[in-house]
Length: 277
Image (cartoon, rainbow, N blue to C red; front, side):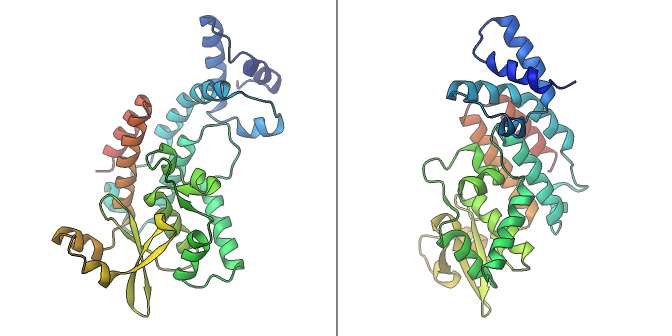
């Protein structure tokens, strides 16, 4: 059985105990919490030092890995099967978000956070993809994570929404997922090194750089850039499906987790990514 509230309180007081037997017992009991005690912490506030937060997050990681592996649903046909299945795509992003959560910070789950953004946009008279771009990026709700583009949390879209920052891919995904809730067209442009989105105005394609505060570029102007090679021009013209975007996100996440020395997490995500090919 998971620890009762009184035991949880006692376990947290033992986080700095370095006795091997005590540390093992604390780890075993916390493992039964499912990897997330954020709601309990919110109702039983206590001051946790940065060290205690780091130790606690690490102790809550193994059950979150188990949950991710258990809830990982591979579509028949792999990533290619997600061509039009945005619901399944978001479900995968949601379990990834839960896995990347520290288990300590109270926040909304991904789908609820996206729903709220869409509701706020609707109440703010957003009626076009360009309006939504302004609402999300130009008005400062979301911004590029310029201090650490390779933070694994950039792939946790619930964290990105709560903190107001992510990398170009995370911001682009939020843009597209909110747009779909509002029946607006936003396409994914899988440009190498810097994910982009595309909207349309009067039939003309316009590229949106979500990382750069939603800056707009006429696609035709970008295609005239002499620094682009033929392959990059082809990519810029194309829209990619959710499965392609998911593979890119998982590849980025493997690299980010590896750089953060989260070896077990990186190996798990690499293994799950392979199931989609």
